[in-house]
Length: 460
Image (cartoon, rainbow, N blue to C red; front, top):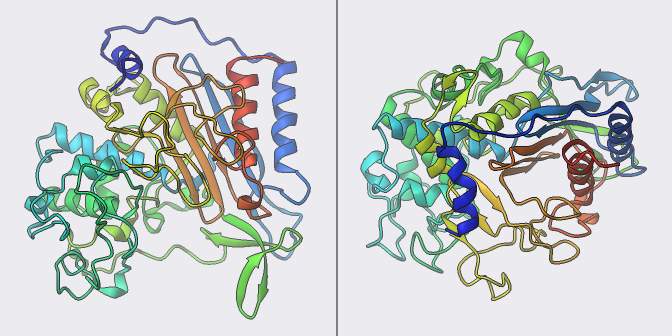
């Protein structure tokens, strides 16, 4: 790990944090930030269904606002429910960071060892057939170096009656050609971002506790932190369901197939619970510890920006939240420690990992456990992990992108600056509007730069 990251994480081991109090945001500056974010939401032809943002400066909330509508009435598209402070979103891959908190808690309880062969937990041999002598560990899976990939799928629903043993055992009913295993390098040696490892992680968590993943996460992390939401909307209260945002895209339908159309209607993509209640993800006879993919450890959590801010502050405070110890300081340090990074140039054929994702280039350059480390690299349009246009914000956290949602959770534990944004869906394909200085979408760049400049730096 570089000296810079060592210095950043060292603050988590100190007995006390000393910093200047966060200055309140002046009314004129707040109005300017409101206007800039509203302009992003209302951009002609690139409107956003909704947006929820929150900024922390020196660990204190200085800005928290919502724009647009969390639910749009299909019969009256200019009406619906405005997004509000309690609005929860399906946070997509930021769920991986939340799941990691549960893993670290079970490690503290002695139920998990990050460096043990996961086959010992699963009860069957779990090896990449290209490198059968190399065990796969939780540490590898959480740092995306396990050699697992998504080519063979990463979710099997309740109707499939899936046991993951049949997915990973050669000759098993769902093993197929073994496409879930990469052949480029042995486990632990090569980075490739994937969702599949997290379904395996959820299954392991079930096996060592005898508890269903979604309910286990409530007991371990969400309830102790007082966070509404979670991984299984079918178990939500009526009040919680009413606070879940529907995710949208603007679409047109041709021959039964939806395609992007920025002039078309907002079409619900997921979580339209006013149209129909959530369907339970597991059947009553589900055998705990057989198929954790059911509950989406990789992307199925619902939380609000305020809820994510509590998580962010807990990590900044070395595991404490509202006076409670959620995780030990040592667990937080281990979780945030760099476990993989790209070669120095980031341009040598990605010999130690795949830094791109989809059309995002040089987008993932360093990784901890369930946490991305943003190195502030800018390589021009559509390339790099720079969060804000001026640069200078090296951070850690996670991104989300699914079903129309785009999101970021990014913070620096040393300065205790951070921000969160959650977008409820775009009117136009965001791939057609890439970032000007990074691999982010342009609307994401504009949101993050506005939050950084106005709320955190407090500059006009």
